[in-house]
Amino acid sequence: MIIMLTQEVKDDMNRMKTYAFCTSSADGEPNVAAIGLLKRMDDETIWAVDNFMVKTLKNVEENPRASILVWSTDTSGAWQVKCDVSVLSEGEDYEAARKWAHEMKETLPAKNLLILKVTDVYNVKPGPDAGKKVV
Image: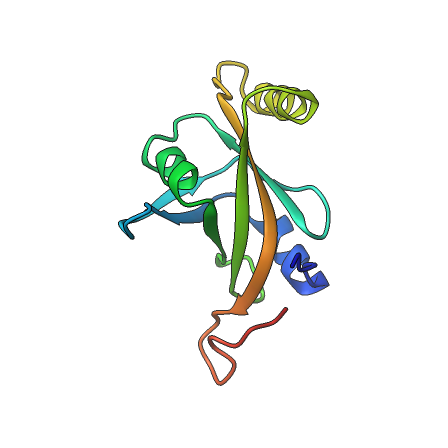
């Protein structure tokens, strides 16, 4: 089931520069990576460009799930966005992502496009609603 992001989560994503991108291997070994080239495409789809992913890419190939932390000193809330992940290394969407990455910095390799489909969003801001599912 695909979930649509709320306006508050989208507004906070617009304020982000770097995300904590969390994955785990098939046997449960966790990994977290800082990722800057992450872009909300619509209310249920997020793109992430693989420039230097090693463990992250291996993990999503073994276990196509990921979690993104949307939080910084510039956001009003704090959110965990869980997603199903697919990896593309060719095609129209991949070429569009590669172009976007090269607009950010021409020398980026843009090896793959990770397409993230939102499945759950949780409030992770400290307080009485911490850990509650938003959508």
